[in-house]
Length: 413
Image 1 (cartoon, helix red, strand yellow):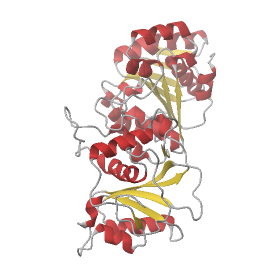
Image 2 (cartoon, helix red, strand yellow):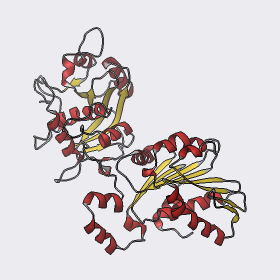
Image 3 (cartoon, helix red, strand yellow):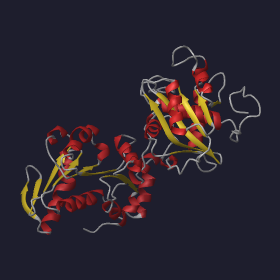
Image 4 (cartoon, one colour):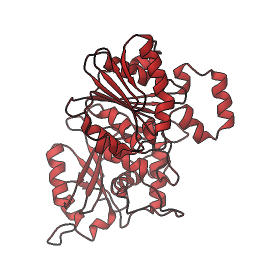
């Protein structure tokens, strides 16, 4: 089957799980059909195609699949009622829908395609389809156009960092099936957010998201930590979980390259974990929740700040935290600004932080962050770090060199 260059890139990938985020009319169904045929050309394979609804499964894939396989004289038997094709090599391709995904239980497959995956209930994959691949150690292709930052977005991020996974992103124009003039016409007809999502295949933030400036431009692999290079840690004191983000600060840019999340924990355990990961031969700067100077997650009652200081960490904090709105604005300004490149990057391995920045939202109808979602602890840690190093109200980042005198203000001297 003739494939475009972007389609070939996906087809030639050796990753077991591939995630393809593509604009409308890119050729997603054609690529899915090609992959089904490619896997089914080996004898005795069982391949599964899943669309969000029965109507979509039949309309998008069934007739085209039959036609392509019949033209190649591959077909042994077709079952129209079950949407199943048996090939002359005894491989079977089954077309199914996710609107009744429980009906897929019990099968065994070598390969599965989830088309328009963003519109499929994630339970269909995690609870049903994924187990059907285990016996055969089967592969999977997730393909579709984004629908906000839902589970399809999570899979896309997994493909950026996790072994055996790969992710791809293509615009409608890159598919080569739609003219530039038509794309321009669509841009005139659609609002900017809809155009970016449908034609440029970007994962648009849902309404009310707090860190609206966060995007793919902030996800960047970290190269290497120097042997004695200082690190900068933002931490939120919370027993369940204790949370921290770890960064380096180079050329006025912060790069968060590690995250720590410990459930049922305390500050001393956080100190121990930091020492295990980063040793004792570097300067460790900590930007904590200011309330930690008056309370403790430990017993007996030594404050969280005292525990950090006793460990030899350099604390940078004031009597109170900056206002939440001010700190949030500082984070958004670091994530994206009109003056130049971002001032904040995050390594793709920091999956929890990326998820929290993507999904932490305000309570409906308010400007109050939702504290019940579980997305607040990592973002709070980041806010404390950014507010200390590059607060919005300062035109230039602060001097982070070791202070010549005792630090008595909010920020290092």
